[in-house]
Image: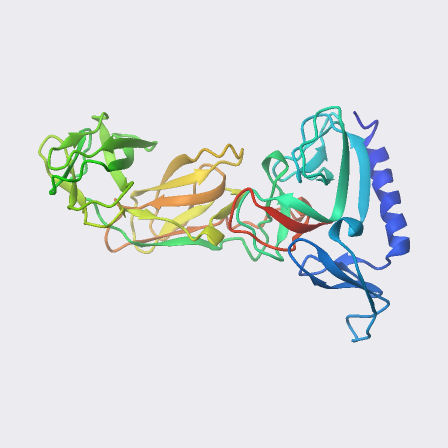
Amino acid sequence: MKFTTLKNLTLCVALASLFVAMLLPAFQVDAQGIRHGKYHYVTAFDRAYLKTLTLGGDPYNGTAGTAVSATAPGLNTTTLSETADGIIPAYRLAEVDSSADLVVGTLASQSIVGANLANASVASAATIKLGSGYVSLVSAAPITAGRPLKSADNGRVIGLLDSTAAGATIDTCAAGIAYTNQPADDGVELVSDDAGDTTQTATVIGTTNGGGVIVVETIALDGTTPVSTTKTDWGIIMAIKLDASCDGTITIREASADQAITTILTTVLSSGVAIPDAADQSAYGLAPQIDATVDSTILVGLRYQPVTGTGTALYQSKALNGTTAVTVDTAALTIEEIYFGAVEADETVLVTTNPTEEDEHNRIGKAVDGTTSTGATIQAALSI
């Protein structure tokens, strides 16, 4: 359905909140993301249910109250039943768009009106029960318990880039490898010194000569017989990955003169690849920054999840500017891999979140518990 005016929706939410306030006065969201106040406050919770609500005490002066048990659904501060104007998946946020339609939430929306409380998708034109307060939501990136949240793509949630998260380290790579004999408009070959290495595949990550767009090609190994990439106009090689360990040493070389670019030793699965810890991969739906420790201007590559949340990783590169941090061109939900094989051996590459704190009006609540996974269901205090 279309809301006749946003004012009507606001009035509805305000009246519902007023009714709740009469029953549970002085509630607010604290640093742990739990709604509490002088007379009613939460003293314990677990990941699935809010376990104990204490009535009549004061958490600030130590006055004890009377404990009662309640499950999370019973503690929603606001519940609305409306008609969806588009598909809203289970535990996803809903917003009112510019046409006053009730649709699934979008990245950094400031028009969120609640979350789908059902563990089932709601079809367009069907009735949806929206809730705020203590609700289940779906993560779009790793989330830390107690941290503020904003909406992400397709009704999911992601952390808000506040002063604590702005400029935080996603990963500090090992020293550069300084690949030599870069192809510079040539093909690339791979060969093992062990004839038995015939079941593995290698992924070559680099650029086209004269450009900065990352190209990825996968090629099957053939033991001591050299195999060539289909691409014959590589510019620089940034990284190499193997899908399984090899018995021999793998040499990656430029094709024309068979000059080695780099090697991968037995049992090693990659060269020039850094993988951030799962808990640190969030880019908060914004463009991260990269910088170096000395004076490098070499291209660094990133594999990332786009803000559209398609589930298919994309790639981008950015030239370093010495110790001056540079912002990459495209925003990301997460940074999955960093490619630094072409960087000089005396350099260390640092990848950080965007340094600019985002609009506080994007905040929709706080995470009660956290996750290192994308697509996980978490508990949150949704305060809209």
